[in-house]
Length: 264
Length: 297
Image (cartoon, rainbow over all chains, first blue to last red; front, side, top):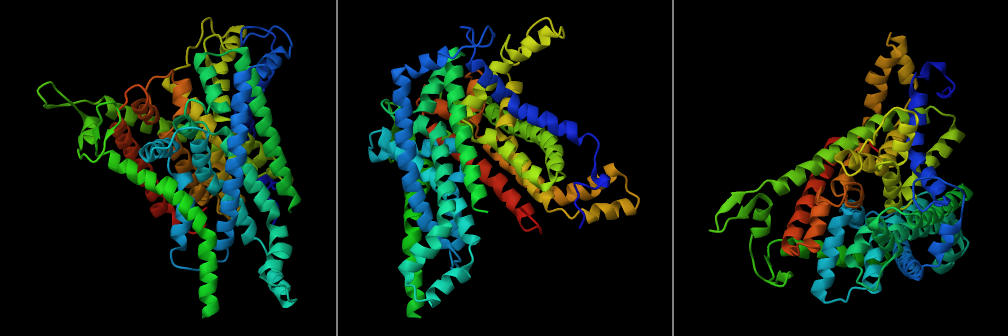
């Protein structure tokens, strides 16, 4: 089949400008935000000159650093737990043919289907009913639950793409179950686990809605803190924090993209 | 046979932690929330455990008069309909922009396609609050769009669109754009372009070939995109909160206010159940209509 990209018959007028407009729409806000973070002016949207001073002011803010530390603690713990649980589930579901299999898949993807605000409310009511004290513990618990499907999907996809004959070959060569898993399955599965963990980490780090409901007074995470700042109004400080958040996300996504390329 | 059951036990053990976590901390809480939506509001603002009433659901449509008679109150219904309208508007906006973009991407050489997919996904991974904040900077009075328009002499006063339905729709469309582009792209990428050539051979012009061949073949992707945008829009909370000016404009904000200032948990639970029902209905409609179709995403 000829490459449709090279066939002049498939050149539709107007597509290129539409796509350009789309990418401008997508990136203009990000570029503007990054630029304004380096604005010297006290007025957040009026450019006067280049300065990095707002980053200094922001990084000196003890509350903000505490919120960032909380975010790191939550995201790291939730990622480790969710990725472990998801890896086990993916291995258990691999090449499975059993009754109730669809039910298991549906349950694991439940956190993706239920609206976040509903999850948040239900989890809050549950914690209150159990008499849990709201704090970092409850946040980590809630994050672990909604991170499971995000970690699960890439691991599962990786497993599906693996050649079952390699495992058979290992067993033919007298590897026992444990050796087969450690020497054959795990090394192939590793990139899937890493991208699953990265997804879970960034989802947890960015989560606002669920955290907003289940975090007690002492468990302010970075998004909760930023929300409070935005509520007060736009300011150069918010520009700088937002730019830092953007940078973290972009570095992370770029890294996970590179990991994804390596495995091919 | 023994090996079979050992295999089954091994699988069960591996799957159990996920089932337990999600079952216990997601399924059970939703069940409890369903129960609470039928309970009385506690005097201190909490829940009167073990009581039974349909009051929270009635409150959705009626309010109690002083003499205990029910009066029709459409305030909450309006918020519900506004949410549905905003979700539909956002879906239409993303489709109008997303379809040509997806088609453009599918017609690029393969190397460039992967780069474009990556570019589409980056904003999705950036923080939701940050993305919405960026739109505040752009849309506010004397914000960047105003500065550009006034600088060009196109307008003499601010356009004043921040904190309106329009700014919420823009924010939502921005947030969920990748959910529309990527599924449509996925179905267009698999498209057999010889079918379009055949349409040309049979005398169709470009527009007709697009409308009668490309769009129908991309339909599973279009449907998936619409459902993936519509559903999260319906339950949006952050965007209407930040770009809508903090008024209870959508269901998500209304639910939140029941756990904040209004302190009416049963009503908040009932609203959540209604939202969940709406989402599941939309989902089931999609599965019923498109999932069995050949080539569904």
